[in-house]
Structure formats: C-alpha cells, structure tokens
Image (cartoon, rainbow, N blue to C red; front, side, top):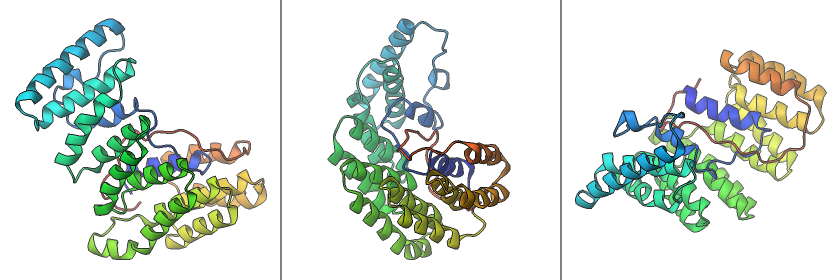
Length: 295
C-alpha cells in the first residue's frame, strides 16, 4: 500500500477507531492542493514572516489576474488552479468566502473526471456552506465511476451520519463490499476491501454497535492476516470498551505487522488511557491515490 493512503487509514484507526471527519475545515485543503502542479511555484505558499495585510494584497492581485485570464479562456486549467489556490490562501487569512472556491472546483472536477480529488474537495466545500444535497451529488458522481474511492466513500458516510442516516451509511458500505469482487476484476485494486470493512466497523462503532463493529474488523482480518490495520482497529475498540486484557495481544500483533514508521504511534495508542469513543476531527494531508498496491 502506498504511504499516503496507508498513513490516512492509520490516522483513522489511531483517532479512536471511529469516523474521521474529512473536510469540514477548508483551510487544510491548501496542503493537499500544494501537491498538484502550481501555476507559479513561487506563489504556492506565502512566507509566514510577510505581514498579513501584504499577503492579502498580493493574493487579491493574483485573484484578479487569474479572473482576467479566465474571462478570455474559461477552461484554462492553470488559471483555474491558480485562482483556487489564491482563494484558499485568502480563506486561511480569514478573507473571502468558501463560495469563491466552489466555481473553480466545479470546473476542475468537470474537466478532470479522472482526478477524484477535485470532486471530493468540491463536496467538502459544499458541505461547509450547508449544501448537503450538492455535497452528496459530488460524492455520488465520483462513486458512480469509482465505487472504491476511499475519500469519496468516507465523505459520503460522514455526510449520511450527519443527516442521522446511519442505516444508509451501512448500506452504502455493504453494497460496496458486495460489488468489490466484480469491480476488482474489471480494475484490479480499485476497491480496498480491508479498508472498506474497517470503515464499516467504524460506522458501527460510532453508533455504539460494538458486536457488529468487531465482526467487521474480524472480517477485515480474515481478508488479509498480514495487514496490521484491522488488527489495530480491533485492539483500539476493545480497549475503549475497557477490555484491556483482550486488546493487549492484538496491539502486540499489530506492532509486529506494522511498518516501522507506525510502531511509535501504535505503542502510544496501546499505552493511552481508554476514553469514550467520539468522532474526532482530522484532515488527510494528501489526496487518495486512485489505485495503490497493497503493503
């Protein structure tokens, strides 16, 4: 499994094994977009020692420049990305509004249907302004062609839970698992079955359906006995329930299976005082790769 995708899944587990909120805060999106081609690398980030007023003025000038280009060339992607980047950075300075990033995101998502990160960011932005139906449509547009896209799945699940529709969230994930074999036959690796099983377990855990959550994690462990993620997820959930004795061998197993870069985090999770599960807020720093080989 690639490092960005693996890191994201581990963040989910280590955040108390419940759903991670994907993008309510729009500011961290800047970090994700900085990994894409910037129209001007020198402008990708404004030095922190520059006064906020100067940063604001510079970014507003950039916005006007990109808007002029787009008046002549509405589908100029370099200008669209630059406009999006500048408006996001203005948001980080508490200037402008989220509505301003929606138009370039809509165009970029339409022009790049193969790059689902634009659709995910669009859904996040729409959810931020309260347009839940628009957010759902953006997620569905991705899942219609990429049913295993983890960021879109996670975003849609969080949206459904926010709408008090846990059964719909469970149904979405169960349907994804039911169709995974066929999807992976058409495009190998397009659905990470273990990750989807874990997400299903996280939904059950968020609803305090602990037996169902543990069953989902057990199913994920059966799918790949060498994958540390579901082992760690199960250990975390047992620990939250106060079942320390049962959790300890699972933490040990996860530690043995995990890549070196995650061992310190697992040790900290094993040593931490159990707390009541609550949905934490965490934002991935990089877009999910469209397909990744398993670790």
